[in-house]
Image 1 (cartoon, protein in one colour):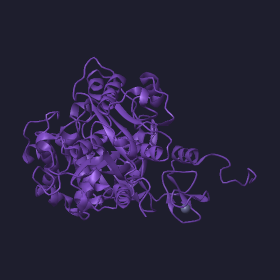
Image 2 (cartoon, rainbow over the protein chains, first blue to last red):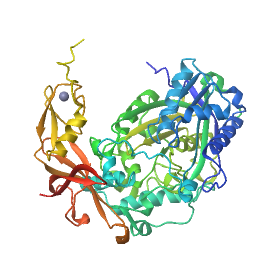
Image 3 (tube, helix red, strand yellow):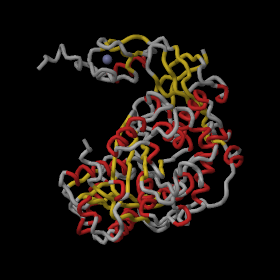
Image 4 (cartoon, chains in turn cyan, yellow):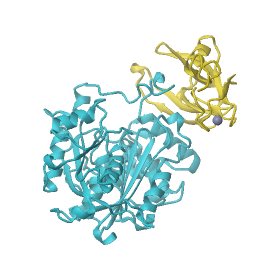
Length: 386
Length: 130
Ligand SMILES: [Zn+2]
C-alpha cells in the first residue's frame, strides 16, 4: 500500500540570500530575507504562513523569536534542533502536518552569520556544552569527530587520503559551474592532500566553509501545489534516524544513521538508489560523502572511496552528487541542511544552468546533524514520478 | 508505586556515584543486571535494554584504540594533541585522550590503560599506552 505521505506535499517556493560575507546584517535579518524570497517565489506572503519550521544554533527560544520577528502566529511549529539535518527533519514534520490538515502553508527557514560572527569574535552557543562525559575533554569539535570517522573508515576499508581528496575536488568542479558558489577556483587532489593538517587525516580542504547565508522553502499540499508559479517538486519519501549525540557513543564510526533513514525514505518513495538522478548530501567534511554513498545504498560498504576516485560523483560522472558545490565549496553557514533541499528542488525545476542534470526527475537530499549523529533522507520528484 | 527505599532511583544518582569514584581514585563502571551489558557513560537506565537494575564494578582500565586523530596545533599554542575513541575491555566506549606518547604514534588497535587525570580542573578518564 502506498504510504500516505508519498507525494502528499510539495515544495512550491525556495528562497536564498547572497552567500559568504554579509557584513552589517544579523542572523534573523538574513532568515527574514530568505523567507521573504521563498514566499515571493511561491507568489505568497508571510500572511499566508500557518506552519513555521526552523532551527538555530544561536538562541534557545529561536522559534519564538522567528514567529515574533516575522509576525507569524502559526498553527503548527517545530523548532527541534537535531543539528544541521534539522531542516530536512522540518520537511518531515511539515509534510505530516500538511497531510493531516494541521497546516496548509509551511515555511521552513534559516539564517546565519557564522562567518561574520567568527570574524568579530562573537561566540555562539557551544554545541559541546553539556555533552555528557565529553565536553570536559575540550576537544576540537566537530572536526575531530569526523576526522576519527575518516580514520576508522581508512583503517577498516583501506580508504585513502587521495580518495578523500577526490570528494573535495568533485565538489569544487561542481562549484565552478555554480555562479552562486563561494569557492570557484580550480582545486587538485594534490592541493587537498598536501594542505595544512587540521585534525588527522583531515587537511583544510576536507572541511566545509563557514559562511553567512539564509535559506527558506515553502511547502503545501500536493492538491494546492498545482496553482503556483513554479512547477511543484513533490516529496516522495522521507526518513529520519538518530544514533548518538557525541562521537564516543556512535555504535559504528563507519555506518551512519543514513543506513536507517535511507531505506525508510526509499520504501516510502517506492524507489531504489538506481532511480536517483541527482543526490545532495550534507558534506560538512569529505568523509560524509563517502559514508552517505555507502549507507544510502549507492555503493556497497567500503567501496565509496574508489567510486569517487573514478570520477563518478563529479560532473560527467554516473551519479551527480552535490551539484551546487556542497558545503565544501558552495556555502556552509552553521547548519547546511536547508541547502541540500534547495539544490534538489532547483535541479528538479530544471533551472540550474551549466550544472543542470539533463532530465532530472528524482533527487535525493540527505541532511546530517551533530557529529554524524542524525540523518534525514528525503526523496523528491517531478509530477511525472507521482 | 514502588516505595522509595526499594526504588532503583533512590539515593545518589549514577553521575554522582561515578564522580565520587574518581575523587577516591576509582574508575567505576555500571553493568546491567538484566541484559548483562556494560553501561558507559553512567546512566540511570540501561541504554541497551531500558532496565534500571544495574550494579557497580571497578573497571579494569584496559582498553583498545577504536579510532584516533591528532588535533594539530602550533607549538606556541600548546602543540599537537591526541584525541581517541577507546573501547573498554568490559564493553562500552568513550572519547578520551591518549597521553604520554607522541600524538601521531597512537594507532587504531593499540592497547591502552586508563588513569584518572584532570583537564581544566575536572577529573576524567585518560589513557596511556598499556
Ligand atoms: Zn540492560
